[in-house]
Image 1 (cartoon, rainbow, N blue to C red):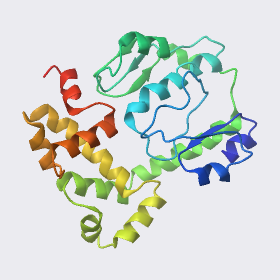
Image 2: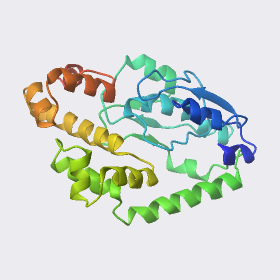
Image 3: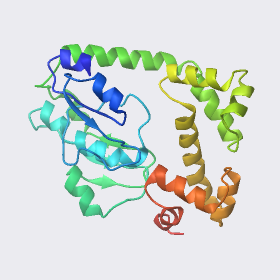
Amino acid sequence: MRWLQAQGLQVTGVDRSPEAIAACTGLGELVCADIENGPWPLPGRQFGAVVVTNYLWRPLLPAVLASLAHMSGWITGERVRPRQVRFAHAPRAETPRYDELLGCPLAFDAAHNALLYDRADLAVPLIQANAPMREHLRGLADSLLERLGQQSLAARVQQLLRAQPRWGKERIAEQLELSGRHLNRKLGEEGTSFKLLRDQVLHQMAEQRLRESPRVAEVAEGLGFSDESAFAKAFRRWSGITPGQFRQGLGQ
């Protein structure tokens, strides 16, 4: 937030930690909210950019895209709009609600989440161009690309969890020849945590297995949950819907 504010931008920060919010006093608008387990705290708001510094719960993606959908119009004097927005999941609300928020054609159950633009839009000048922001974002992108060439600790943890979804932190740490505390510290340096990685992997595996297995209880057991109820509670936290509702969206 500090860097963005120094560029003359109006900044809004969201964090569930009151201590983190207090540390940012004076840097812009501050909102204390748990966006992983609570409602989207900025309904109807639009932003020129959204910067996520840690794991973002996937069901919030439509709300984030709604905040960004009009950015291309703002930076080009309303000359550019997305040709289509694609979601890699079934609708989680009535389609007219998506239309109201995003204002452009939609596609669900796509291969990837994406904003699509016409190739000719690349030639439209940006009247709101910000050179310092461009250089900062370019540096972040270069850093990310460099890291992609290396296998991070987070990637190794995810591989182990996919192979052994029932394992906990200490067992994973043992396989990596680390203590549980050291594992947490090193993952924190990569901007993540064991809990977030495990939730991501189990969510992905749960959706895949719900497509394949006829019984929810089998999916729950295979992923290490004590019973079907515990699995259903976790799945709802991850996706905002129950396993049954997920299957209904698949037509099963």
